[in-house]
Amino acid sequence: MLGFILRRSVTMVWTLLIVSVLIFVIVNLPPGDILSNQIHQLNASGEAASVARARFLASQYALDAPMWQQYLIWMGFWPGPNGFSGILQGDFGWSFELDRPVRDILSEALWMTVVLNLTTILFVYVVALPLGAIAAVRANSWIDYLATFVGYVGLATPNFLLAIVLYHKGAEWFGLPVGGLMGREFAGQPLSLDKILDIAAHLVVPVIVIGTSGMAAMVRRLRANLLDELGKPYVVTAIAKGLHPARAVVKYPLRMALNPFVADIGNMLPQLVSGSVLVSVVMGLQTIGPVLLSALKSQDYFLSGFILLFVSALTLVGMLISDLLLALLDPRIRFVARSR
Image (cartoon, rainbow, N blue to C red):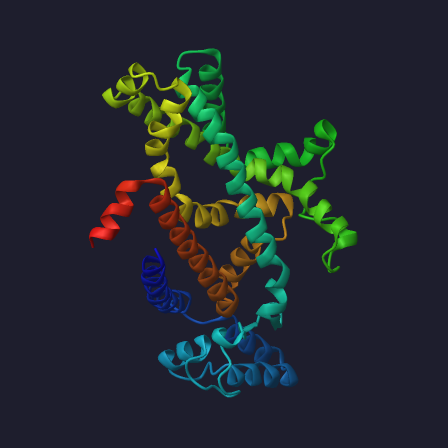
């Protein structure tokens, strides 16, 4: 297992390097950039001091260097005007739109994004797996019909529409705090028990909004997969030999039916980040979604490039976790790995 983890880690590093090249090229494909546009506007207005500062920032981040050299400096592989100072060294660049370091802009948004997405994934699996399994075991019963109804409603309701409804009615109907991921009195404060409890209360509505569609889809898929496994001869044989029906379901069919969902962990992270952009805008969530949307619109490529690279790293980590869980869940995968 240790050798497998090391091989996958090396593969992750090479993949992330290739992805970083693609991200850098893509964010630089549109003609012009926010800094060049600012310089043209300032030249037209005659603000010499501001033009001088913009040109200074351009030289500080080697924007006048060739594209390949800009990439190496951005990643920290090549010395720039300030020596080796790139992503590898913890310098994420400068946001020319907000006139602040990228690190300062995203310091709290990154952590809030990770917390929100991990909580949403936990909600999806904790709700969907029992509901889908019970719906399959009790097919054509009232709980099966309830799971089917929840699945249809969850899939048919757009996230942003559900966000608008709960944003306006969440506090009135359920007494839950809505808007943002923490109270204003905790913004910028160090982590404490009161702040953690406040964040947990604010997470309830966003997690339900973002996770409902994924949960509904997982319930439907798990029900179909488990029904297929329950109809196979080995299940009938196990029950006929005296194995308790609940154990006969959990020990083999459920494990086999879970494989696609464990494999989906890596794909869920970027889908949740991209799918929560509109929800974050509607509910005023302090995540990287609205920041990424604004950065892409303004061609603020240091800010947008780092966010895209961060999401790519999350995807690769999720894929590694899913591979490890699959190896633990399915003996056939372990045997194949040993034979190689």
